[in-house]
Image (cartoon, rainbow, N blue to C red):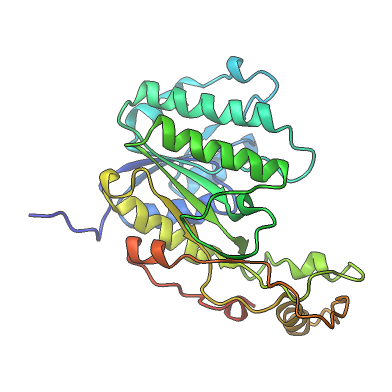
Length: 290
């Protein structure tokens, strides 16, 4: 008899247990999983442990990737886990891509050396598509135009090539929730370009639900695959951010007028992922996220 997916009989290590990792950990534990979570701050250890997350202190050594230190407690977590979720962003400013890539590779190799059958879920970003225009889906070749996008694209391919029967990739569109919204940064800018381009956003809750659904699947069902998480509706930047500013009573956003019928930019499609994982978005439109 096939096992029901109502519970997760797994132990999961979340490498990166912050804004996204903590609600994901709570969701996984609610579905029966045991969760280890890493944090770079010792002040977070008690906070995570109080939530039922078995916290471990860990920081990437990007200065000397090959000299990376792994505590005995973190090694034990790797040994006991069936799934490792890599959710460590490189940062958007002044990223030194090569040592970041080497550090993530070292981390994954170390974990697999301790647990050879470990499932690897690498959290990536739709910025791997750079300035591509038109529809991009799970099968579209990457074309990064930033250091961060290039680092993620390299790590995606490395994971899938080195661990084809264990690894999968999850690309996230722009992440938001009620308190984290790009309008708070845009409102202070003048003469914003590309108002005719569409937005590609996904709510934190939908990401948590989708990742939980993914981890419920067997490794064989998801290994070697690339998944996208992005709300199905794509209003233009000008329309959406004007509405967001009005909703949050922040004033008006200063977009440069455009008389031409310009490109919509890239439109991230995620229908294949939705069908594969069998979940429904709670926030199908960015307007639902205000």
